[in-house]
Length: 414
Ligand SMILES: [Zn+2]
Image (spheres, helix red, strand yellow):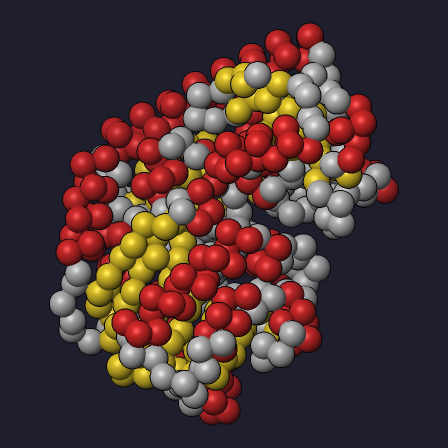
């Protein structure tokens, strides 16, 4: 049955069910990026899952070759809160300012956000007078409800769709930001969204854009939370299969480079942006397996260069890491840079990761204060996609050592 939740190895494309799947980049078996460990958990086996990027020759979708159980990837105590990332708050405000007039959204219209986390996105629409409703599986839902953003704590599926329709009716706006590539069974997901949406409503999704990943060799974007890596062509097809026209698309800077897509039910004209972006994707070579293999070669080259560079630094001094974002765990496990090479990673005071060990590589996560006291000679920037900003902040706060920028070309910055 196509509508069943799929967990385990991916043998057919997640969008078009083709079996013409090609290996692009092998990351090996890796732990779940949020599965931080206590010292006590080190006495237990640590579970890893295959993490490999594959390409569908039929529809052009890049995807993982294995889907772990979402309850393991997004446990109730999932630590991330959208509201802590200022860049996302600005992004949601900008989204609301643009889409409310453009799609004629009115006060009292219903806006539903899927994977709504702490309600940060819905807040921007609530402030425009809309009725809002979130759906969120993790305990971030509790924070949202506390902040007066009504939120159902559940995984989004057919059953939840039916109960929302019964209780609230159809929505004029459905949003799914940093979640549309995460939810299992993409065709059913698109159908459920379509049934929630009013006939003249709009569906807006934001996902990491594989064109950015490809152009900037962002190999660390790949982890088990993202089971699909969108480019426009397969995304348009996925939405069309559920009766949507992709009316507009924008490249945005969120999460190291994302794509924001606007879709409406029925036949509508497509904006020039959509056509322009597809031609950029084609020119870059995203739908060409040979070019994709070049991406893979570049990633392996960057891995070797980074390992050499960090080992060289470790000979001359102490190396610590700045931040412990999800993506860092892909990078650290892919390069095998572990506790014997990096002394510790540091997070801002208050981070729930402080006192724990990184999954797979077992590097202790410490309070950022330690960094300024101990002044290690080298600091590896793990959120390198915002590296320029971070280096300025670290200098201002008093860090005196050298920075290591891991990607796309590993280098030391004085
Ligand atoms: Zn496909």
